[in-house]
Amino acid sequence: MSKIVETAEEQLRQTVLSALGEAVAAGELPAEPIPAFAVEVPGDRAHGDFSANAAMVSAKAFRLPPRKIAECILSHLTLDGTYFERAEAAGPGFLNFFLSPAFY
Image 1 (cartoon, rainbow, N blue to C red):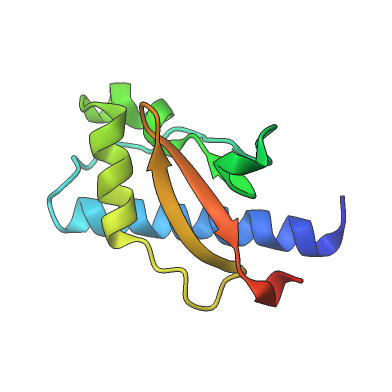
Image 2 (cartoon, rainbow, N blue to C red):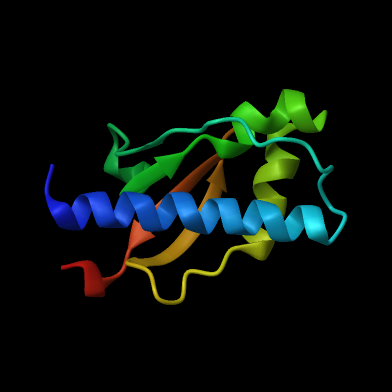
């Protein structure tokens, strides 16, 4: 894997963790340990350049529907200073991320 792809994955992981932390601090999500989540390249590029299952794996710990967790994450997500230009929730709670031209 190239260094730039590894950097993008790490940026994405830290950005999602930061958004989760902000949602907990705002009282929108309970203060529970955040389970390990995957950041990967989806098989179908229509689902973004990268995806994360953070909302899906956190549903049991937070005792909330994954889609609600995904929406909380998105409301606190800041992509400034990353290789990403936008993010969206999909399906039951997956997070899809799209690279900005800065990545290329």
